[in-house]
Amino acid sequence: VLPYAADASHEIVAQSGSSLQHTLKWELRTNGSLVDDRYQPTVGVDGFAEAEIAGPPGDVGYAKAQGGSSLHVPLSSHISIHATCSGGILRPLSFSGFCRSPTI
Image 1 (tube, helix red, strand yellow):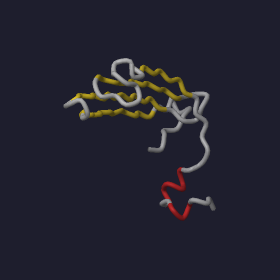
Image 2: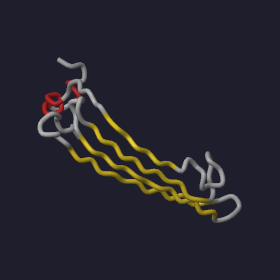
Image 3: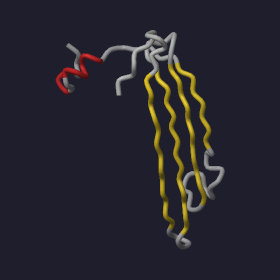
């Protein structure tokens, strides 16, 4: 019996186990280049985009895309508003049966 089996449902425990992932990932980030201070921004925008695909020779297949942005607007010399939005999508890929779908 797995050590964490008491904390999970039978369906989750049945799907648990090891998997091998072979992934290719692309990333684009502004890394604070469009804000006034990289670590404590008060004005500007920041964003990121990522795409990832996994498949053979691994045993899990999927395509994933994520993105997000942050907006920093000063209200006065000591106060600013920060808004963040992010989202993504995950789609299973079987590669004609070579890979199983990811457990979400």
